[in-house]
Length: 439
Image: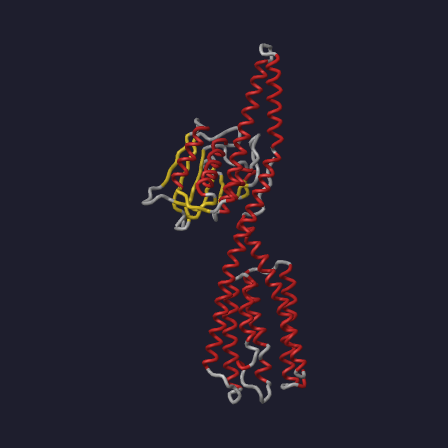
């Protein structure tokens, strides 16, 4: 029966965890933006509302800006709670923060009383620093960069406009402007670094969580198969007892053959459990650099001992230095991948196996990758096991589960690589594994 395929790789799950965290940060910022607009509105009313400096014209600028800001904040909060914010929407939101914060200063600069001493002498520019700092909650260095640059540009434009309109009131000079630029730039650097560090922590936590959950799920499946082991042992024990009771009877030969078959199936099952458990243990480990050529030769020797009738060829392009790749689980992880691919090639579809299996390793299309391929002259992949070049969870073997290849694919993806399976026109099957080099 086909096994269900894994819904996502650890990298995809970690990215979803990061997006969830970024959306949580955006939802919190939406609330903060609404509170900020509410405080500005309260201050506006306490200063006299339409009866304060600027009167109705100032109100026509101030109130629409606050209304739009609160409406947009409510909408972004709703979208963030439904996890709709992606990388570019986070950038757009960071820019909007800067726009709203500085748009709220327009009325102060355009309509003011005789006590006005310039935009930078008011407490309002503190909002510029705050806008940059809170960008870190989005866990997006790109959004932090955008928010910082937008803040600097908008503040520079407002200062230039202030110096033009209110030259006789302004008491600050270029030194104060430079100091504020330095403060905002420093806040931006802190936000960008904080975003990057937090992003790495969240991605790492997401990957580890995905690996642990995947391991727990698959090990739970292995434990459920304990029933199959007990059935085989019970059958072998019963037949052995019958053989002991009647060692020379007419059915003793049949009992002995049945015991041998039970033990053979039990041995195959234990080997399968060992292989799958090794794959799960490798998934928990960190990515390490491995000498690919040495790992291939070692795996080929192990498989040759089991399939002596299959001609297994290992081919590697001559290089000045050994080809090395990074893979989760290090040598154990790569050995698990190669061994599974070789065994699958030798077994074929369970009825017909390969006579010749070729393993090749060579540099990939870019210096950051290398390509490992396993091809054979067997029956190829069954049509129901392939979706394009992606392996589905399933098997055509009587005692197979299809889980082994799913673990191989998951391990490769967790290492930052990819796995591609095809049936070449000349026949047989081919699996290509793209791995990151250990540069």
